[in-house]
Length: 584
Image (tube, rainbow, N blue to C red; front, side, top):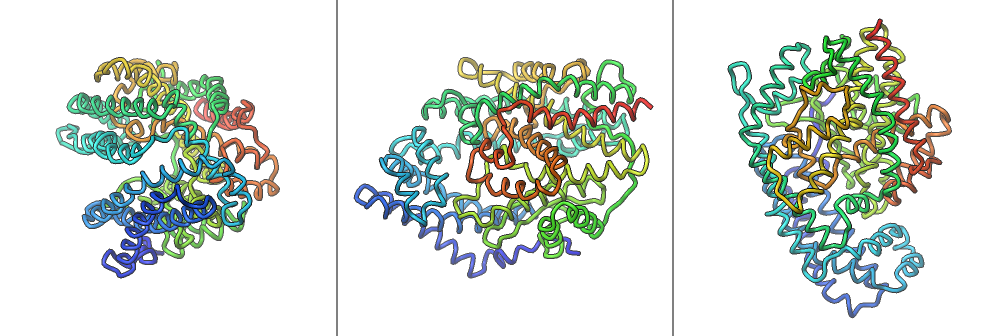
């Protein structure tokens, strides 16, 4: 079994002739796109549309391959200076497409018979959804050089403030038990089996934020004010409206989901109090024990064991999925093990040029690592389901991005819990699921509430670190209720969560994705094998339809609170089983 992924099928190296050729081709295509849009006013509409799409496809294909290779090289070795340099060159080239892209979109959106031209041409018809969105979003475009100016200014504005947050949180020293460590290491101790380690690590973490809180507060205030300004210039009513429109989700859908979550929050508080009591706490669960492990699982997996387990399990669901999983293991799609210089966590990236994916994990043989592999392989399956889409039809929005990955987790965990040999193993499995579910419900809700508070206040005043901490604790109080010990919350979550320093409201999509997948799994449990073709068609549709229309493929109405209730009830049932196990 391979230990590292094969990137040579993308490019042999940065000095390979293929890489140099594609860089030259990208530079040429970007220049051609700029020249083309300068002459749009004199072009025949059909010629303009077909030529514009062809140029965008060419740029997209080249940029995806080049940038993906550099990104994967950087992920495998963060000290790869050449990869960082190449990525910078690629992004600088692509920044030159902002103005031409805006010009093309503005021109196309003003064609009175745009959709008739699109529907009447075999080459353009596949891009019906794309052109519908161009027409819809054109009202939010900035005139003249506005888009290019915003793209270039963002590099020294919001992006730079985001880099500052990342730098400060990755370099702040943390004093722990007489030694100095880093924030990433100290936060990982939240999962330690020793309760004193968890408590000491939490206290060390909280203490370290005092060094950087003021600087990060400036970063957050600046990013949010930039977002508010951007929304005003473009004509959005609010940052949330901008996020919903760019995510292709209706406000009614978000309202239905949040309303259902509100109904079920007390159930999560029941779980937190039961866990707290089992760990010896009487006033709810203190923050430092949120991730305390419970139960026990002694099973260790090699990568070959993981392959055999997942292939066997997914064969029961769908042969196409199982075959792809086998291929991913056998054809070196996966970089498995942690090593010096390799980034942490896990992710999956689609390699469109090859019709494959590449997956990075930090595998150490625990069952949780097998679940992580299943999650990332779900992304790979999603990529496979959309591989026949046209080049510009391969982006799915944040809310549906976690559908296949979380669905895979549901398949794995339902089987594992059902086959658990003893109480300790069953408790460990259920508790790990409830930890994750509590994150996407209680914690995500607290993040959503916090960000809403920040936006509601930022335009009129600067919020210092103490104000931001008070907002965070209030958001946690509303979302965790009496399940969390009020004397032991986490007021500095706004510092350590990078989501606040990137896309606006990059929080509710996690709840959406987790619940959407669970709702789909509940549907699968009702329909059995008849559901699988609908599921694959749904994944195919994610890139060319709104979230609501995507869900209709599986006969689901996302604006109906009952759908979200069905997903939450799956978690509620697990909470009942958990309470039963810890009460025995």
